[in-house]
Length: 105
Image (cartoon, rainbow, N blue to C red):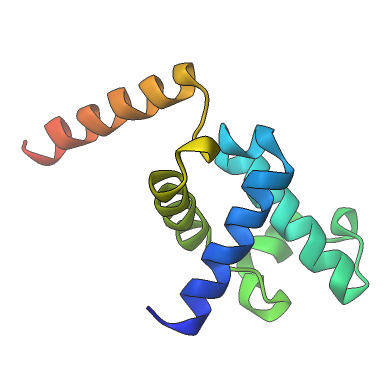
């Protein structure tokens, strides 16, 4: 694993520990990670438009959404205590099954 991916995985684990709500919502996880990167840069997250955020993520040093999501999946697989609540886990599993069915079409 590259150092960059390991670093994202470590950050994701830190946030899943610190913010239990982030275990249930990738959007919540993105928010906390991006908010803290902005603070480190001395920028208020509210001062960045959605357009600027989406088109210039790399310039701000934000990890890709997909990297965060995959890291969250890996961390939750390795640390069961950091998994989402039962309802969210079941919904994610159902969605995964739906994607599999769609992919086979």
